[in-house]
Image (tube, rainbow, N blue to C red; front, side, top):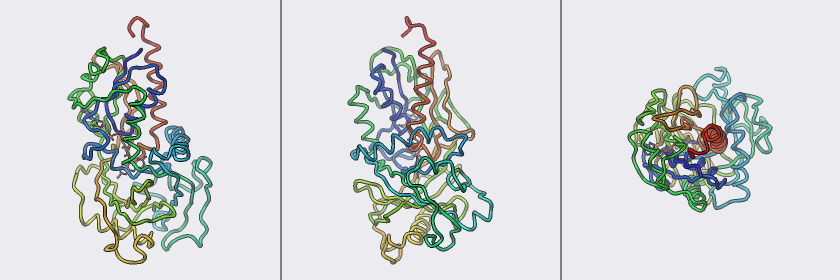
Length: 361
Ligand code: FAD
Protein backbone atom coordinates (compact mmCIF):
# COMPACT_ATOMS: atom_id res chain seq x y z
CA UNK A 1 0.00 0.00 0.00
CA UNK A 2 1.61 3.31 -1.04
CA UNK A 3 2.35 5.60 1.89
CA UNK A 4 1.17 9.18 1.69
CA UNK A 5 1.69 12.05 4.14
CA UNK A 6 -0.48 15.14 3.76
CA UNK A 7 1.01 18.25 5.34
CA UNK A 8 -1.83 20.55 6.43
CA UNK A 9 -5.28 20.17 7.96
CA UNK A 10 -7.00 23.11 6.33
CA UNK A 11 -9.71 22.57 3.75
CA UNK A 12 -7.08 21.78 1.07
CA UNK A 13 -5.23 19.08 3.03
CA UNK A 14 -8.34 17.52 4.56
CA UNK A 15 -10.15 17.28 1.21
CA UNK A 16 -7.14 15.60 -0.39
CA UNK A 17 -6.86 13.19 2.54
CA UNK A 18 -10.56 12.32 2.31
CA UNK A 19 -10.51 11.73 -1.43
CA UNK A 20 -7.42 9.51 -1.03
CA UNK A 21 -8.97 7.62 1.88
CA UNK A 22 -12.14 6.91 -0.13
CA UNK A 23 -10.03 4.81 -2.51
CA UNK A 24 -8.85 2.53 0.30
CA UNK A 25 -5.57 2.01 -1.56
CA UNK A 26 -3.16 4.19 0.40
CA UNK A 27 -1.91 4.55 3.98
CA UNK A 28 -2.68 8.22 4.66
CA UNK A 29 -1.30 10.35 7.51
CA UNK A 30 -2.21 14.03 8.00
CA UNK A 31 0.44 16.10 9.79
CA UNK A 32 -0.44 19.63 10.89
CA UNK A 33 0.47 22.38 13.30
CA UNK A 34 -3.18 23.51 13.38
CA UNK A 35 -6.31 21.37 13.33
CA UNK A 36 -10.05 22.11 13.17
CA UNK A 37 -11.04 23.65 16.50
CA UNK A 38 -8.00 25.99 16.49
CA UNK A 39 -8.34 29.69 15.72
CA UNK A 40 -4.95 31.04 14.68
CA UNK A 41 -3.80 33.67 12.22
CA UNK A 42 -1.52 31.05 10.58
CA UNK A 43 -4.56 28.85 9.85
CA UNK A 44 -6.91 30.35 7.26
CA UNK A 45 -9.68 27.80 6.81
CA UNK A 46 -11.73 28.40 10.00
CA UNK A 47 -12.02 32.12 9.21
CA UNK A 48 -13.68 31.74 5.82
CA UNK A 49 -17.38 32.49 5.31
CA UNK A 50 -17.60 30.32 3.34
CA UNK A 51 -19.70 30.10 0.21
CA UNK A 52 -19.50 29.29 -3.50
CA UNK A 53 -19.33 32.36 -5.73
CA UNK A 54 -17.33 31.34 -8.84
CA UNK A 55 -14.38 33.69 -9.30
CA UNK A 56 -12.26 32.19 -12.04
CA UNK A 57 -12.44 33.22 -15.65
CA UNK A 58 -13.71 30.45 -17.89
CA UNK A 59 -10.23 29.27 -18.97
CA UNK A 60 -9.20 28.68 -15.33
CA UNK A 61 -12.51 27.35 -14.10
CA UNK A 62 -11.65 23.63 -13.80
CA UNK A 63 -11.11 23.64 -10.02
CA UNK A 64 -14.42 25.38 -9.30
CA UNK A 65 -16.34 23.43 -11.94
CA UNK A 66 -15.16 20.11 -10.56
CA UNK A 67 -15.90 21.09 -6.94
CA UNK A 68 -19.44 22.35 -7.32
CA UNK A 69 -21.24 19.00 -7.86
CA UNK A 70 -19.83 17.54 -4.63
CA UNK A 71 -20.50 20.65 -2.52
CA UNK A 72 -24.04 20.77 -3.87
CA UNK A 73 -24.52 17.05 -3.15
CA UNK A 74 -23.32 17.50 0.42
CA UNK A 75 -25.79 20.38 0.93
CA UNK A 76 -28.67 18.23 -0.32
CA UNK A 77 -27.80 14.79 1.03
CA UNK A 78 -25.49 15.33 4.02
CA UNK A 79 -26.83 18.09 6.30
CA UNK A 80 -24.43 17.08 9.09
CA UNK A 81 -21.57 18.39 6.90
CA UNK A 82 -22.68 21.92 7.81
CA UNK A 83 -23.28 22.88 4.17
CA UNK A 84 -26.69 24.17 3.14
CA UNK A 85 -28.29 25.52 -0.01
CA UNK A 86 -28.65 29.29 -0.17
CA UNK A 87 -29.50 31.71 -2.96
CA UNK A 88 -26.76 34.21 -3.83
CA UNK A 89 -27.15 37.69 -5.27
CA UNK A 90 -24.21 39.27 -7.10
CA UNK A 91 -24.67 43.03 -7.46
CA UNK A 92 -22.70 45.17 -9.92
CA UNK A 93 -22.50 48.76 -8.73
CA UNK A 94 -22.82 51.65 -11.14
CA UNK A 95 -19.36 52.86 -10.04
CA UNK A 96 -17.54 49.64 -10.96
CA UNK A 97 -19.50 49.21 -14.17
CA UNK A 98 -18.46 52.69 -15.24
CA UNK A 99 -14.85 51.94 -14.30
CA UNK A 100 -15.01 48.93 -16.65
CA UNK A 101 -14.61 46.41 -13.82
CA UNK A 102 -11.21 47.64 -12.65
CA UNK A 103 -9.85 46.82 -9.19
CA UNK A 104 -9.49 43.76 -7.00
CA UNK A 105 -12.98 42.48 -7.77
CA UNK A 106 -12.58 42.51 -11.54
CA UNK A 107 -12.84 38.73 -11.56
CA UNK A 108 -15.07 36.15 -13.17
CA UNK A 109 -17.79 36.67 -10.58
CA UNK A 110 -18.87 40.10 -11.80
CA UNK A 111 -18.46 39.83 -15.56
CA UNK A 112 -21.74 40.04 -17.45
CA UNK A 113 -22.96 36.81 -19.01
CA UNK A 114 -20.63 34.65 -16.84
CA UNK A 115 -19.60 31.07 -17.73
CA UNK A 116 -21.06 29.80 -14.46
CA UNK A 117 -24.61 30.71 -15.46
CA UNK A 118 -25.01 27.20 -16.86
CA UNK A 119 -23.45 25.55 -13.81
CA UNK A 120 -25.21 27.17 -10.87
CA UNK A 121 -28.86 26.42 -10.15
CA UNK A 122 -31.67 28.70 -11.38
CA UNK A 123 -29.37 31.44 -12.68
CA UNK A 124 -31.21 34.61 -13.65
CA UNK A 125 -30.45 38.29 -14.19
CA UNK A 126 -32.23 40.47 -11.66
CA UNK A 127 -35.04 42.70 -12.76
CA UNK A 128 -34.45 46.46 -12.42
CA UNK A 129 -37.17 46.57 -9.76
CA UNK A 130 -35.08 44.21 -7.56
CA UNK A 131 -31.93 46.35 -7.60
CA UNK A 132 -31.00 48.44 -4.55
CA UNK A 133 -29.88 52.06 -4.99
CA UNK A 134 -26.50 52.49 -6.69
CA UNK A 135 -26.67 49.09 -8.38
CA UNK A 136 -26.70 48.94 -12.20
CA UNK A 137 -27.30 45.20 -12.61
CA UNK A 138 -27.10 41.89 -10.84
CA UNK A 139 -27.81 38.19 -10.94
CA UNK A 140 -29.15 35.53 -8.64
CA UNK A 141 -28.45 31.79 -8.48
CA UNK A 142 -28.68 28.81 -6.19
CA UNK A 143 -25.45 28.27 -4.25
CA UNK A 144 -24.32 26.91 -0.88
CA UNK A 145 -23.01 28.34 2.35
CA UNK A 146 -20.48 26.26 4.29
CA UNK A 147 -20.45 26.55 8.07
CA UNK A 148 -16.71 26.04 8.51
CA UNK A 149 -17.09 25.42 12.26
CA UNK A 150 -19.05 22.26 11.42
CA UNK A 151 -17.56 21.33 8.03
CA UNK A 152 -13.87 21.12 8.98
CA UNK A 153 -14.45 18.71 11.91
CA UNK A 154 -16.83 16.76 9.67
CA UNK A 155 -13.98 16.31 7.17
CA UNK A 156 -11.71 15.09 9.99
CA UNK A 157 -14.39 12.60 11.07
CA UNK A 158 -14.87 11.32 7.52
CA UNK A 159 -11.11 10.83 7.16
CA UNK A 160 -10.75 9.11 10.54
CA UNK A 161 -13.62 6.75 9.73
CA UNK A 162 -11.66 5.64 6.65
CA UNK A 163 -8.41 5.01 8.49
CA UNK A 164 -6.57 8.32 8.07
CA UNK A 165 -4.26 8.97 11.04
CA UNK A 166 -3.73 12.53 12.32
CA UNK A 167 -0.55 13.85 13.92
CA UNK A 168 0.27 17.26 15.35
CA UNK A 169 3.71 18.64 14.50
CA UNK A 170 5.38 21.85 13.40
CA UNK A 171 7.72 21.23 10.49
CA UNK A 172 10.67 23.45 9.71
CA UNK A 173 11.34 21.78 6.37
CA UNK A 174 8.99 19.96 3.97
CA UNK A 175 11.39 17.00 3.81
CA UNK A 176 10.59 16.18 7.49
CA UNK A 177 7.11 15.08 6.37
CA UNK A 178 8.50 12.03 4.54
CA UNK A 179 9.41 10.33 7.83
CA UNK A 180 6.11 11.09 9.61
CA UNK A 181 3.81 8.36 8.29
CA UNK A 182 2.04 6.42 11.05
CA UNK A 183 3.17 3.24 9.27
CA UNK A 184 6.80 3.92 10.15
CA UNK A 185 7.65 3.65 6.44
CA UNK A 186 9.13 6.49 4.43
CA UNK A 187 6.38 8.27 2.49
CA UNK A 188 6.15 7.58 -1.23
CA UNK A 189 4.37 10.90 -1.67
CA UNK A 190 4.07 14.08 0.42
CA UNK A 191 1.17 16.44 -0.33
CA UNK A 192 2.06 20.01 0.58
CA UNK A 193 -1.16 21.78 1.63
CA UNK A 194 0.49 24.33 3.90
CA UNK A 195 -1.52 27.33 2.68
CA UNK A 196 -0.02 30.75 3.36
CA UNK A 197 2.83 29.17 5.34
CA UNK A 198 4.26 27.90 2.04
CA UNK A 199 6.13 31.21 2.01
CA UNK A 200 7.97 30.26 5.23
CA UNK A 201 8.30 26.48 5.05
CA UNK A 202 11.86 25.24 4.44
CA UNK A 203 12.30 23.57 1.06
CA UNK A 204 9.36 25.55 -0.37
CA UNK A 205 9.87 29.20 0.70
CA UNK A 206 7.58 30.47 -2.05
CA UNK A 207 8.18 34.23 -2.07
CA UNK A 208 5.27 34.78 -4.47
CA UNK A 209 2.76 33.84 -1.74
CA UNK A 210 1.35 36.65 0.38
CA UNK A 211 -1.74 37.28 2.52
CA UNK A 212 -4.92 39.05 1.49
CA UNK A 213 -6.29 39.95 4.91
CA UNK A 214 -9.99 39.33 5.41
CA UNK A 215 -11.75 40.89 8.38
CA UNK A 216 -15.29 39.78 9.22
CA UNK A 217 -17.99 40.18 11.86
CA UNK A 218 -20.09 37.15 12.85
CA UNK A 219 -23.54 38.06 14.21
CA UNK A 220 -26.62 36.29 15.52
CA UNK A 221 -28.94 38.47 13.40
CA UNK A 222 -30.43 36.88 10.31
CA UNK A 223 -30.12 38.28 6.79
CA UNK A 224 -32.04 35.68 4.83
CA UNK A 225 -33.34 34.95 2.25
CA UNK A 226 -30.13 35.32 0.23
CA UNK A 227 -26.37 35.85 0.44
CA UNK A 228 -25.18 39.03 -1.16
CA UNK A 229 -21.95 40.39 -2.62
CA UNK A 230 -21.30 43.80 -4.18
CA UNK A 231 -18.68 44.62 -6.79
CA UNK A 232 -17.12 47.29 -4.57
CA UNK A 233 -17.73 49.91 -1.91
CA UNK A 234 -16.99 53.57 -1.20
CA UNK A 235 -14.63 52.82 1.70
CA UNK A 236 -11.64 51.88 -0.45
CA UNK A 237 -10.47 49.33 -2.99
CA UNK A 238 -9.40 46.87 -0.28
CA UNK A 239 -12.80 46.75 1.43
CA UNK A 240 -15.79 44.66 0.35
CA UNK A 241 -19.47 44.12 1.06
CA UNK A 242 -20.84 40.61 1.49
CA UNK A 243 -23.18 38.69 3.77
CA UNK A 244 -23.99 35.02 4.14
CA UNK A 245 -25.98 32.95 6.61
CA UNK A 246 -24.19 29.85 7.93
CA UNK A 247 -26.37 26.79 8.38
CA UNK A 248 -27.01 24.74 11.53
CA UNK A 249 -27.02 27.75 13.85
CA UNK A 250 -23.76 29.24 12.56
CA UNK A 251 -24.91 32.88 12.52
CA UNK A 252 -24.42 35.43 9.74
CA UNK A 253 -21.01 36.47 8.39
CA UNK A 254 -20.62 40.14 7.48
CA UNK A 255 -17.61 40.97 5.32
CA UNK A 256 -15.18 42.26 4.75
CA UNK A 257 -11.76 43.28 3.48
CA UNK A 258 -9.20 42.09 0.91
CA UNK A 259 -5.97 43.72 2.09
CA UNK A 260 -3.00 42.40 0.16
CA UNK A 261 0.31 42.15 2.01
CA UNK A 262 -1.34 42.92 5.38
CA UNK A 263 -0.40 40.38 8.12
CA UNK A 264 -2.25 42.12 11.00
CA UNK A 265 -3.97 39.47 13.15
CA UNK A 266 -6.11 41.77 15.28
CA UNK A 267 -9.47 43.10 14.08
CA UNK A 268 -9.43 46.83 13.35
CA UNK A 269 -12.40 48.39 15.23
CA UNK A 270 -12.86 51.13 12.63
CA UNK A 271 -12.99 48.58 9.83
CA UNK A 272 -15.48 46.53 11.88
CA UNK A 273 -17.81 49.53 12.18
CA UNK A 274 -17.59 50.14 8.42
CA UNK A 275 -18.32 46.46 7.69
CA UNK A 276 -21.41 46.53 9.91
CA UNK A 277 -22.69 49.82 8.48
CA UNK A 278 -22.35 48.57 4.93
CA UNK A 279 -24.05 45.27 5.81
CA UNK A 280 -27.16 46.89 7.21
CA UNK A 281 -27.32 49.25 4.23
CA UNK A 282 -27.61 46.31 1.82
CA UNK A 283 -29.56 44.12 4.26
CA UNK A 284 -31.75 46.46 6.38
CA UNK A 285 -33.63 43.37 7.61
CA UNK A 286 -30.55 42.42 9.65
CA UNK A 287 -31.50 44.98 12.30
CA UNK A 288 -35.11 45.64 11.36
CA UNK A 289 -34.15 49.10 10.12
CA UNK A 290 -32.22 49.99 13.30
CA UNK A 291 -28.52 50.97 13.44
CA UNK A 292 -25.49 48.74 13.97
CA UNK A 293 -26.12 48.85 17.74
CA UNK A 294 -28.87 46.33 17.07
CA UNK A 295 -26.35 43.80 15.72
CA UNK A 296 -25.75 40.96 18.19
CA UNK A 297 -22.06 40.17 17.71
CA UNK A 298 -20.69 36.66 18.23
CA UNK A 299 -17.11 37.33 17.15
CA UNK A 300 -14.83 39.60 15.14
CA UNK A 301 -12.56 37.61 12.85
CA UNK A 302 -9.40 38.01 10.80
CA UNK A 303 -8.10 35.42 8.36
CA UNK A 304 -5.31 35.63 5.80
CA UNK A 305 -6.15 34.34 2.33
CA UNK A 306 -3.14 32.59 0.75
CA UNK A 307 -2.65 34.53 -2.49
CA UNK A 308 -0.02 33.31 -4.95
CA UNK A 309 1.12 35.65 -7.74
CA UNK A 310 0.88 32.98 -10.46
CA UNK A 311 -2.29 31.38 -9.09
CA UNK A 312 -2.62 28.09 -7.24
CA UNK A 313 0.45 25.81 -7.26
CA UNK A 314 -0.70 22.34 -8.17
CA UNK A 315 2.38 20.49 -9.37
CA UNK A 316 4.95 17.84 -8.57
CA UNK A 317 8.49 18.45 -7.36
CA UNK A 318 11.14 16.07 -6.05
CA UNK A 319 12.62 17.44 -2.82
CA UNK A 320 15.44 15.55 -1.07
CA UNK A 321 14.48 12.37 -2.92
CA UNK A 322 10.74 12.49 -2.06
CA UNK A 323 7.96 13.25 -4.51
CA UNK A 324 6.08 16.31 -3.22
CA UNK A 325 2.72 17.31 -4.73
CA UNK A 326 2.08 20.97 -4.00
CA UNK A 327 -1.49 22.18 -3.45
CA UNK A 328 -1.40 25.70 -2.03
CA UNK A 329 -2.17 29.32 -2.92
CA UNK A 330 -5.98 29.16 -3.19
CA UNK A 331 -6.56 32.81 -2.23
CA UNK A 332 -10.29 33.40 -1.63
CA UNK A 333 -11.58 30.19 -3.29
CA UNK A 334 -10.08 27.36 -1.22
CA UNK A 335 -13.46 25.83 -0.36
CA UNK A 336 -15.17 26.31 -3.70
CA UNK A 337 -12.16 24.77 -5.46
CA UNK A 338 -11.36 22.11 -2.86
CA UNK A 339 -12.72 19.00 -4.58
CA UNK A 340 -11.44 20.00 -8.01
CA UNK A 341 -7.94 20.61 -6.63
CA UNK A 342 -8.04 17.32 -4.69
CA UNK A 343 -8.90 15.61 -7.97
CA UNK A 344 -5.86 17.30 -9.57
CA UNK A 345 -3.67 16.14 -6.67
CA UNK A 346 -4.89 12.54 -7.04
CA UNK A 347 -4.07 12.61 -10.76
CA UNK A 348 -0.53 13.75 -9.98
CA UNK A 349 -0.19 11.09 -7.29
CA UNK A 350 -1.34 8.39 -9.72
CA UNK A 351 1.19 9.58 -12.30
CA UNK A 352 4.00 9.64 -9.75
CA UNK A 353 3.16 6.17 -8.38
CA UNK A 354 2.85 4.71 -11.86
CA UNK A 355 6.34 5.97 -12.65
CA UNK A 356 7.78 4.32 -9.54
CA UNK A 357 9.05 0.69 -9.69
CA UNK A 358 6.62 -1.62 -7.82
CA UNK A 359 9.51 -2.93 -5.68
CA UNK A 360 9.93 0.58 -4.25
CA UNK A 361 6.34 0.82 -2.98
P1 FAD B 1 -4.95 26.63 5.75
O1 FAD B 1 -6.37 26.57 6.12
O2 FAD B 1 -4.18 27.82 6.21
O3 FAD B 1 -4.27 25.30 6.31
C1 FAD B 1 -2.87 25.15 6.29
C2 FAD B 1 -2.52 23.92 7.12
O4 FAD B 1 -1.12 23.67 6.99
C3 FAD B 1 -2.79 24.08 8.62
O5 FAD B 1 -3.22 22.89 9.19
C4 FAD B 1 -1.39 24.43 9.16
O6 FAD B 1 -1.22 24.13 10.53
C5 FAD B 1 -0.55 23.55 8.27
N1 FAD B 1 0.84 23.97 8.24
C6 FAD B 1 1.36 25.03 7.55
N2 FAD B 1 2.69 25.11 7.77
C7 FAD B 1 3.00 24.07 8.58
C8 FAD B 1 4.21 23.60 9.17
N3 FAD B 1 5.38 24.22 8.94
N4 FAD B 1 4.17 22.51 9.96
C9 FAD B 1 2.99 21.86 10.21
N5 FAD B 1 1.83 22.27 9.69
C10 FAD B 1 1.83 23.36 8.88
N6 FAD B 1 -12.90 30.37 0.20
C11 FAD B 1 -14.02 29.94 -0.43
O7 FAD B 1 -13.97 28.99 -1.21
N7 FAD B 1 -15.22 30.57 -0.23
C12 FAD B 1 -15.34 31.64 0.61
O8 FAD B 1 -16.44 32.17 0.78
C13 FAD B 1 -14.19 32.10 1.29
N8 FAD B 1 -14.27 33.14 2.12
C14 FAD B 1 -13.16 33.54 2.82
C15 FAD B 1 -13.28 34.59 3.73
C16 FAD B 1 -12.19 34.99 4.49
C17 FAD B 1 -12.34 36.10 5.48
C18 FAD B 1 -10.95 34.31 4.33
C19 FAD B 1 -9.76 34.69 5.17
C20 FAD B 1 -10.82 33.28 3.40
C21 FAD B 1 -11.91 32.90 2.63
N9 FAD B 1 -11.83 31.87 1.68
C22 FAD B 1 -12.95 31.43 1.05
C23 FAD B 1 -10.53 31.29 1.31
C24 FAD B 1 -10.24 29.98 2.03
O9 FAD B 1 -10.49 30.13 3.40
C25 FAD B 1 -8.77 29.58 1.81
O10 FAD B 1 -8.47 29.54 0.42
C26 FAD B 1 -8.51 28.19 2.39
O11 FAD B 1 -8.96 28.14 3.72
C27 FAD B 1 -7.03 27.81 2.35
O12 FAD B 1 -6.96 26.54 2.94
P2 FAD B 1 -5.60 25.74 3.05
O13 FAD B 1 -5.96 24.40 3.55
O14 FAD B 1 -4.85 25.84 1.78
O15 FAD B 1 -4.75 26.55 4.16
